[in-house]
Amino acid sequence: MNTIFFDSHFHLPQDSDLAKFQREAAASGVTWLMAVGGDYESAVQARCFAEISENIFFSAGVHPHEAESYLGKEDRFTEFLLDDSCRAVGEIGLDYFYENSVPASQIRIFEKFLDLSLTSGLPAIVHCRDANGSFRAYEDTVCLLSQFSEAGGRFVIHCFTGTVKWAEKFLELGGYIGITGIVTFPKADNVREIAVMVPADRLLLETDSPYLAPVPFRGKTNHPKNLPVIAEAVAAARGVETAEIAEISTTNALRFFANDASRLTAATRDSTPFSASSPFSVP
Image (spheres, rainbow, N blue to C red):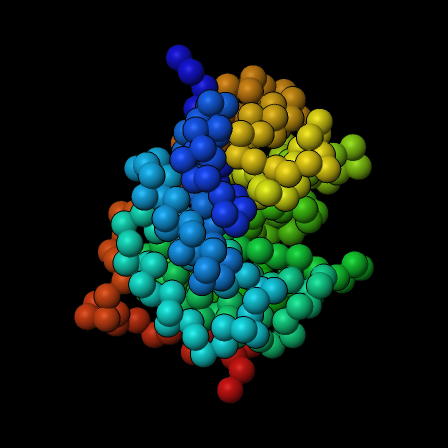
């Protein structure tokens, strides 16, 4: 039986040959794919890619880098959430490392899309990166996700590069943890430690391509076809066979992105918006 992989997070390069892109991934056993949108245009491209195969899903959201550009424009994304191939809201979250958007704007957009995640029943794909020597982004993210989780929200912290302490906090909230090619980097002992401590039923694998190509492809453009290399590294860290990690992570991703919840409709929306009770709400 062939080993099957699910790349739970990648970004399509602009002007990609979508059919060729999918064939190259499938040739490496990566037959399930989640194309992630971080702004309106990339969500449109991801949706087009999902039309190729029933094994391809897409997500729609606003990356924290783009937060200020989309303030007041969040409703544009509801069109994506009605598509059957849309299986997540994201990439959303907080990034205080670059602060391409000020924290207040990032928080407001994050709140809005967590609300969309709740009302649509779709899980959230969350980005969390802090400034060097700071844990403010982690603290704010945990606070927001605590309320989100209590309201029934589901989430994954993608490309996790934090500490065991923070991983435990996200896991306590019911979150999943996404492991990327960083797990192969020589100095990334923390990521290998996380790859070992994450419960088997909360582990997702992702390339985050075209970024973060794993060793031995580091420095080159990444691609979902490289996911088996990441699985091999995680398997080595956990002391199991690569096929076991492939099966575990694929099963987890299929469960996480299963679209059994009701779709977003104005008629059925009857919940208090998530952001209304948030201590971070900005008038």
